[in-house]
Length: 238
Image (cartoon, rainbow, N blue to C red; front, side, top):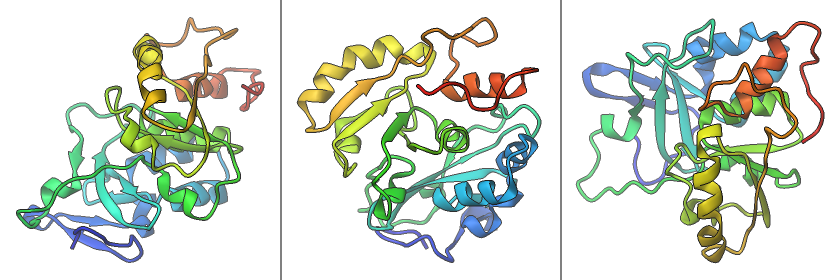
């Protein structure tokens, strides 16, 4: 059972009502995996990404985005459901947290980490990119594999204590469209609370944004390019 420290290999978490939450061995059962499969990426690439992020799946085909730290300890997991055709979140199935489904000790306290942080246990030679959502990080690792993509998990979850766990000096930050101003305003305070060099990347510059929603993220841009006729899957470097 999940506790203060549990390596992800071979775990099986049993929640209320017997609902199981399995590790990456069943990632291909999730609705999110089936959406990624529809994008046409090679199966080996999908396998690489799923294993890198330790993606899991629950009994209702929800993907589990584990927050696993540099020591391999699982902090918690977020369960999300997606449409297998559009990749959009199924809003009638709200996100759930694995730790809230567990019978944990009374003194247990949640201490989050960035999603994808576990990848830096073995590889910190690539530049680091930070986005808001876990889905965006996973998709961008397919589109732009020269980065290691991390996610803070929410517009208001860009926090120094999460950033300080990253064992590299520079982090490129790619806000969602509706978070650019907020994250830009927050940057000086964050910079004072960390030794990292933080850079906001204006990924919308020189892009045709007519097909993007006001709250689009960088993965939406790449998906739009991916599905557009006569357009390469990988746009010009950022």
